Amino acid sequence: MMKSKADEEDYWNSSKFKAFTFDDEDDEFTKLKESRQAVNSICGLVEEEEDEDEVEKVSWSGEPVGSISWSVRETASSLREQSFPKIDTTPSLPKNSSGYSLSSLFKGKEGEREMMDCADYVSDWSPEETVHRMQQGKAVSLEKFRSLQEKLLLLDEAVGVHDGNVITAVLIYLKKSLSKEVLFRELESRQTALRHFIHYLTESKEQRLLLELYRALGRTEDEALLQYKEHLRITDENKRRDFLKSCVSLPFSPEDAGHVQDHYTLLERQIIIEAETGGKVEIFQKFPRRASILNMPLITTLYYCCFYHYAETEGTYSSPANIRQTFRIAEKQYFVTALAARAKLKAWHDVDALFTSRNWLGFTRKKSPLSFSRVADILSKNNAPVQVLQEYVGLVDDVELRVALAQKYKCHFIVISTYRDLKDRQLLLGYRGKVERGSEEERKIDELLSNPQIRWKN
Image (cartoon, rainbow, N blue to C red; front, side, top):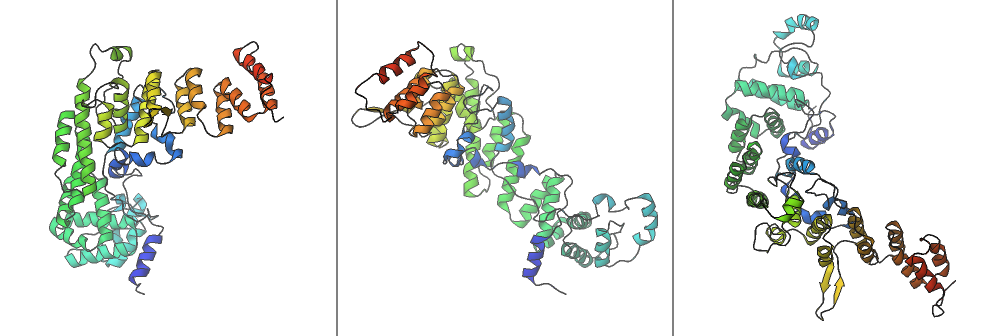
């Protein structure tokens, strides 16, 4: 019984079968992250407080920086995930449980079975019978389907049984027996078979034929993205830069065109920064570079500039402010990256300057796009002294969290002042036993306990 188009689609989407692949690995396109992860999506990473761990993951030295734990090696590997646009060529079908495989296209699975199926191999099977035998893993001959009509009937029958392995096997036969022009024309009206064919060409790395297919179908954006992917094969950085420059003029979508432009601009900027290796500059001697900045992700590049070129004026290419403006880096992402870099260098004056805000009356106060509890965590992991830590722990609004952090980081005066503000004598007495005897903290507690002007609540 014929199924309606809606029924056919429902069956297709709910099918337990999956499309044929040569291996279980994802193709290279699906491994590529969209460029907004490297540029515009940076904003998305830092919009929510719970994402702060993710936005911090960048390091140049390879050692932990706050909660930032990237190493140069990890950063280099992440480059493979940074590339900008992607094409989803994976067929929508799940992998099937068919007994058929490409290895059984012209032979049976076992020697004995091959002998038994010898007669069947040359039999005059119809398209429906041929596909059914292919599903069973039996040897068949597709050469008997000579006319275009017979070949298309065979393909339609394979698609109709929703068996990805069989579809792919038939497509391989059509690829060998039909001209490209005829094959492309017929696949255009058979979207399911077309998706399988694109996936097959991608897996088998037949890029030239895939480009011709996209061109014939008028899929200019897919063609441009496939050409753009070629930059991964270029090892020379100057040649890669020139190649990316040529990609800028390809017919991308407006959004992807911006991402490709950013990718080219970033590599061009990195080549310039790489030439500034430091020479006799003290910071390069004190903290030698462990790897090249070339082809690193955007945020790693920003971290590098905050580490080695923090004091440079905005007009220079390696200035962190210039990087931020050129690539439209969100305030929170810039802040946490700069904080990590300067804390790593123990440049506490620079850290303080990041938080200092001056109002129109000239008064200064501490302001942060990052929660002060996270700030304290980053500073602590960079071995900030208690004098630095307590300044930011004391700015945590939540009383319980502030006390917990102060106890964790041994900021005793924060705990003492909080208990004083709460007028809780019992808590203060209890904490007296936790500080060192004869210490300044103990003397401060005794002073408060003996102060008659404080009206304790207990």
